[in-house]
Image (cartoon, rainbow, N blue to C red; front, top):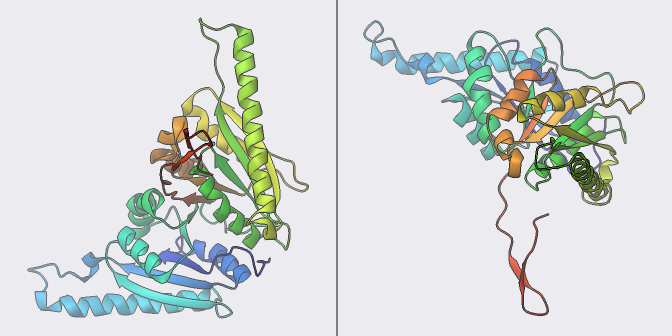
Length: 346
């Protein structure tokens, strides 16, 4: 595994923990990313306020502070045990315990510490069921400005790769969706053997169905033009990756166009594409899916909110979620004739 010294890379990786073994499954993958990037691993244990509040009047209210201290002591001992158990002694590791609500506390901490990537488990047991699988994961996916790598592997299957993993990046033609490309490239390069990182760019387009006001020839011509436009778009993105900021990562880049006729089929089509690409020797498909939580045009409502969560629930592989920021409106410029034109956002 390798990270080019002058290439974009992760410097700080955060794993939020709740005390359950399942949440700890994120540590192995995070540690591999940290090791490849010569980065720092941050382990955070969030103590819920409810664990520090006496059950008044059964418990005297003056025991609040001792209960808090006891909860923090248990959390620190837990993190110390995890650090030793996971054999993280060769890495730079920072552990912290904070009191608060999980989603807000995790995001605030990550921003304060300058975290580049959050790695977390999507399912769990005991307290993790409500924390990771429920509102915390949903809120981080929807609102966290830092990329979140959500692991959804079935229980008792460790998150490891026997080959250089390939990342599938779903695109809808917008600059917002393209914001997933850079973190996906960094992740692929971090988990791959030197020079063996691989990205698959897939463009999602709607296939027009025949209707009464259109001939079959018109329908076929429209769909052909749509596909050609999508293929040209992907080749443009590929060229930018090979010659621009990401060029030092030396990624292998493949592309495909995925069509759908019903929006309800998009999740299925993405999952099929992630499993059936098959153009790399030794394995088929992709190991990680990357997508932005923002889009526009027809894809807008899908990438915002429930669609991303739907992919998380359905996928049996990690999902890298990037919360894209909306760009500013194009700045009008003038032609030589004085006519205003809009500069597209790239």
